[in-house]
Length: 399
Image (cartoon, rainbow, N blue to C red; front, side):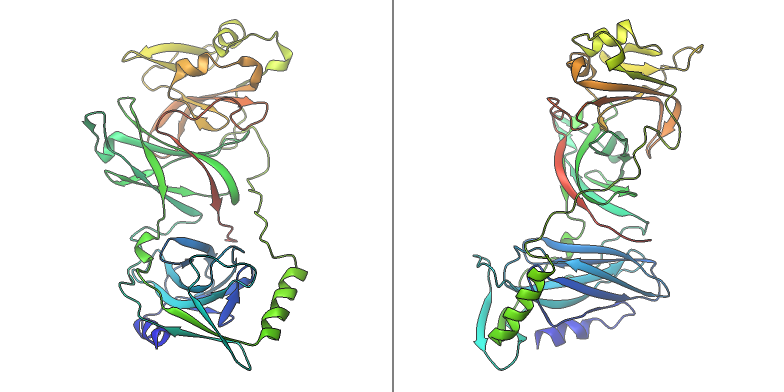
C-alpha cells in the first residue's frame, strides 16, 4: 500500500529500480536510474535520522547503474531510496527493506513473521516525504554542502564577504574554494578524489575573521519524517544462505575504503614549484620563522590591517602586495601566520613556492606557499579556530 503510494507519485521521466526487494545489512545493492535529461545521477539511501549510503553515477543514453555497499551496522527496517539529477527538480523515491541478521539495534523497526519464502511488507503511514530535489547545478564530481555562521562576535557578513574553502589534508594539494549560495550556505564542487579522507573546512571573511563552519547533508530536504513498520516474512534457510554467501565474499563487516587521490605529485595545476626546499638538506632550526629568515628566498612577511600575511614572488621581481599568497600546511589553509611562524621547523619536510597568480574559485592569489610535514597529517598542528576537521567519505563515480 505504502510502496504503491510512493510509486504513484513518480509519474515523471526519472525512475529508480533496485535488483532485490529486501537486503541484508552489508549486502551490495544494485541501483538502476533512468532519466531523459540529466547526465549525472545521485542515489541516496536515508532513514529519518540522515544519510545511510549513497552513490553518484553517470547516465549514458539516459541509463546508469551503480552498486551501493550497505553498511553492516544499519538497523533493520525501511529506508527511503531517492534518486535525482541536478538538471531535474523532482526526486524518484521508493522504499527499501533492510534486515540486519548480525546484531540488533534500538532503531530496529521490524517484525519477523515465519513463512515459506522471504518477502517484505510495509505497515504504517509515511508523512511529509519531500519530492523536491535540491536546487543545485549539475557538475561532474561531488558536491559538499556546508553551513556557515555568518553572524559572529557582533559582526554580520554577507555572502559576498565570505570565502569558504575545503582542503584535503595530505602531502598533495587538493584545495577547493566554495560558492556561497546565500549568507549561510556554501557549496563545494570537488573532483578527482574518492574514498574516506581527512578534510578541513574554513570560512574566512575578507576582513580576516574566521567564521564557524560545518558540513551538512545536501540531501536533508529528502529525509522522510516517518517510515512504515517492516513486516518481514522470512524463511530461515534463505536468510542464512544469503548471510553465508555475503561472509564468503568478505562483505561483512564492511571494511572502510582507503581514500584515493590522483597520482602523487608536487605540482599545482600541472606546474612545478618555482622553488622547493628539502629541510633535511639544511641545518635544523627550531621555528619556521628562523627557516624563512635564513634559507628561504622569495618569501616576505608583511602586516595587512595589523595582521601578518606571507607573500611570495618570482626571482628578480618585486613583491606584489595587492593580494596575499595562499599559505597551506599539509593542504590546509593558514590564516594565523604568526602561529605557523612559531611551529616546530623540525616537523617540516618540504617548503614549496609557486609564484604567479592562482585562482581556486573566488579570487586570485599572488602565489602559493606550501609547507609539507613529514607525516602529511598536520602533526601537532591543530586546525585553527572555527575550522572543521573531519573524515569525509567521497563517493566514487566513473564519468
